[in-house]
Amino acid sequence: MGTTTVLPSGWSAIRASGSGTVGQALSPVVNDGTSNTGAVFNVGTGGSGDRALGTIASGATVPAFGAQFINNTGATITSVNILFNEEQWRTGSNSIVETVAFSYSTNATGLDNGTWTAFTNLDLVEILTSDNTNSAVDGNLPANRSAKSLTIAGLSIPNGGTLYIKWADTNETGSDGMYAVDDFSLTPNSGTLAVTDLSTTKSNFVKNTFVKTNEITFGAQAKDVKVYNMYGQVVKTASVKENESLNVSELQKGNYIVTGTVNNQPVSQKILKD
Image (cartoon, rainbow, N blue to C red):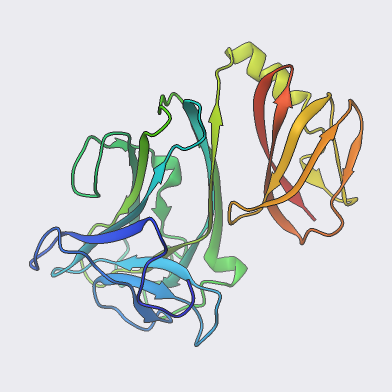
């Protein structure tokens, strides 16, 4: 994002409720966690280029933010893999465990319309639950971060169709904390698998999901293998044979998504490179 008041392409934010104008578009406020005003934030330390998209709710402004994704894959999307790091940049003043609720829609045209389905496993949930000092913290520190990685299945998004996602804040009693999304990526999957087939195929795809030797080992012949970083960028491609390894020594430590085709079925799996 950089230190800008412009949201990334495809992303938007609104005042979902509050005493201000409901539905009004919000621009992110550049901050380091020191603000306790209801808003959407471009948050990071000082002038650092490492930024996250965050929220604080207040009586005047209860934000919601999210993104629109258009299916241009040429096939029907049946599931998406979403992964990101949640970061807490400010503590609240109450003992309530705060939550910024995640949901998705396949018929919305904006954050304030359509039918939305809650998916609580991707909620932003207060990390520093025992700290009620209402003060700024460094969301980049490991103690203030939480990795999220899940698949939304059961979708049927035709080519040209749209998936909307959003996080909607709630105004709690007292001062709220600041919670943010960083290192976001979304990977679409097409095709369907029976439950038993999916279990078998995934177990034969990546054998070492915790990569400690700079090599990913595959348990089956896989075509069109792609390795995605946390930004959704393809950083490695290959086709591999059964029990063959793919060297990823050039990749930095962290989480990645590996996708490919095994027995003509699309498969994806999260790995952690140490």
